[in-house]
Length: 449
Image 1 (cartoon, rainbow, N blue to C red):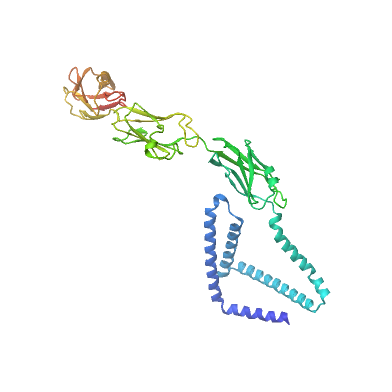
Image 2: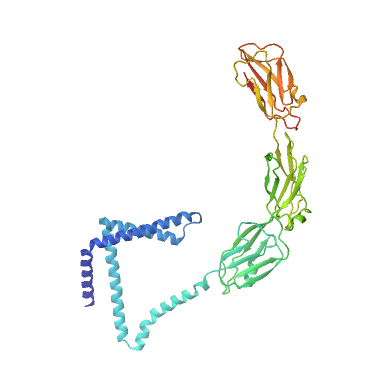
């Protein structure tokens, strides 16, 4: 009777589905859109978690989404293969459900009609299975091995403060003695253990950790949980302590500052105590300048030192400023080697020439001159100027005399008139200095006419 009733209902459901096929297909299209969105979100999650690897949940969601979309597409486009597979799966799933329902109904009928001892025997096996399942669920967290969920310092940690404690947090309550026995620190450090709750071990060194030292923390596999379950695998955590101070920014470098722009050095940590501006003047200057510049230096906060000159730096001069070895930091470290920076003020360079470069109508009896940006040093200019005659693929130096026109212009006067329509060139050697400073012309300067 039950089987015939179910068969009748299945026939009615089939007829309903046939009658409303278009609506069902529309519903399938909607579901297709939902699953397509789920797939896109899964792919986005995969893209942004690729560096750490896909989780099992992400993979299952991805595969399920692809599978469902494939089935829905096959049904929507009436693919014979997909339709047949879906029909077979549905038929077998329905048969399985009907079989379970039938056996359950028969078991309940026998259970209702049985005596109490018989009922106990009937529920014995299901009851034992249920109790085992419940017991497994309750003891799962107890029987699984403990594991470390976070440490401080973390693995590959750098610039760890010297006064740090070492903390290891487990995912469950631990047997303290076994954990302390399984804990080791290399190089060996004397210290004391303490616990925060029953799952976090804290090791406090008796003295500060060594500066710029790599340490390795090992927690062996015989660290036991409070139920004496071993950790099974060992953990190895490496970190490096705080090093010595160093300069992270220095300005200016290479080129000179404009006007009275300051010279600034910034360190990676506090170098002086935080105090008032007047008291900061008592602290050691962060650097020295050579050649000497008059001006005022002061600490800006605790990590930056600034020197503001009250005179314009000398032209054609290279200045160096040096952070000396041994300059102490507030945390007890010190600069380990002299740190030197430099900048150069404006060098001599050519501003104009006569005749101009590639000029085709130069006067054979006129002088050839060059004007510089700085006063020219006469001693340096004696052998720095050359007049060249280009003829038949050869270069011949033309005899001439050098005369100054003011302090920044110099003229070359040939011993005899130049040959008309021939090509000539003038060259000023690198190293030509000015009276303003020792830095000379950086590269040779040549022009032809």
